[in-house]
Image (tube, rainbow, N blue to C red):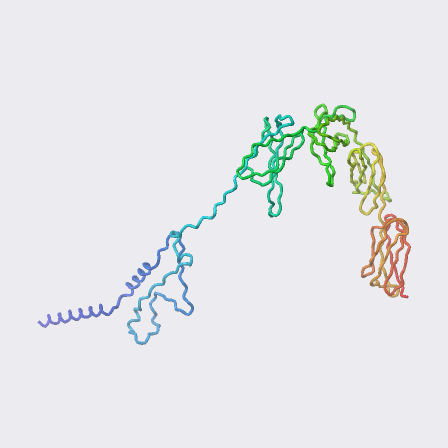
Length: 482
C-alpha cells in the first residue's frame, strides 16, 4: 500500500514538472534557428533568372545593425528582466531587402512597351525619260545625257550643283533616269562629238513624278575636216588632235572641248561647233613640234584644213659663271608671242651638274631666252632655234662690316649705314647694324657704291666702294668723337 502511494506521488510530480516546462515557454536553440531560417526564406522575395538581385539597405548612421546571433555571455543584463531570458532573446524580424528605385514601380514583365517614335517615310523617287534627235528629227545614238540638280551643301547655307549620269542613248535615241531624288531645280545636258552641246532650261522634279516627254534636239553646227601630214608630206596616222574654244573673263583664255586621233590615212574632223573662235592644235610627239592654228567657226560653215607638222627644233647650251664654273640648277626659259596662233610659245629646262640644258618643241625663228639661278643676276638674250650657246651669269656682290668707336674700339649703339649706287644700276639699301655693330648685304649688283655711316655722338663717315662680280667685301669702319 505504501509502495503504491509513493509511485502515485512520483507520477504527480513528473506530471507537474512537465506542465511547468510547457508553460514556461522555453524552447531549444536549434528549433528556433530553423524557424527563423524558414521565416526568412518565406518573407524574402524570390529572385527570378534575368532579374537584378535586391540590394540590402545599409543601416542608418548611429543605428545598431540587427543580427540573428544570440547575445554573448558578456552582454549586460537589462534591469527588470529575468536572467533566464538571456539564452533565449526575443524573436528578431529578418531584414527585408529593398529594390532599386527603377524596379520599385513595376516588374519588367509587367511594364508597358515604350511608345514608338514617328515613322520617317522617304520622299518617293522621280523618273525621267526622253529622246535625243538631230535637226531633221532622226534619233542620235551614243549621245551622252546628264542631269544636273541643285542640292544643299553640308552646312545647309549654300546650294551646290550635283551631276547625275551621263547615260548613253540607244539606237532609238532613248535615255532614262530612274530613282532620282526630288529637286526644285534640274537641268538636262546633252553632248555628242558631232553635234552642238545642249543645255536645257531649269525644271522641277517632284516626288514620285514621272516625266517622259523630253525631246532634245542637237543641231549639227560648224565642221572642220582635217588632213594631217608629217614633215616629209606623207599622211600622219594616229596623231593627237584637239580643239579649244575661246572663253572670256578667265585667267586662261582657252578651254579644251574635244579631242580626236587621226585615222590610218591621217584624216579626222571636228563637228558640232557653235559660233565662236577656236584654236586647232596637233603634233608635239615623234619629233614634231606643236601646231596651232586660230579659226573662226559659224554654225553653217564647213572648213577644210591641211596640217603639215614641222620638225622639232631645240636650243641647247651650257650655263657658266665668270669663273668658268658650271651653274647647276639654273632655270632656262624660252618665250615668244605668236598672235596669229592665239597663244604664247613657252618652254623651259633646268641645267644639270655640268650646267647643260636642252629646250625642245621649238619652231623656226628667234626666241627670248632667260636664265636665273640663286645668287646670280638674271640674264636674258635672243637666240634662234637650232643654236647651241654658252650663257654667262654674273654673281651678286656681298658686303659685310662692323661699326666701331675709334677711341674705345667698341661697337657703337644706334649706328646706321646707307649704301647708294654711283652708277645707273639699282641697289640702294639701308643697312641697320645690330647691337654689336655688324651689318651685311648679300645681293649687290656689281658696280660702284657710296657707303655712309652715322652714329650718335660721333662724326659721320663716307666710303667709296667698288663691288665686283661675286666679290665679298669685309669692312671695319671706325668713327671719331668730335
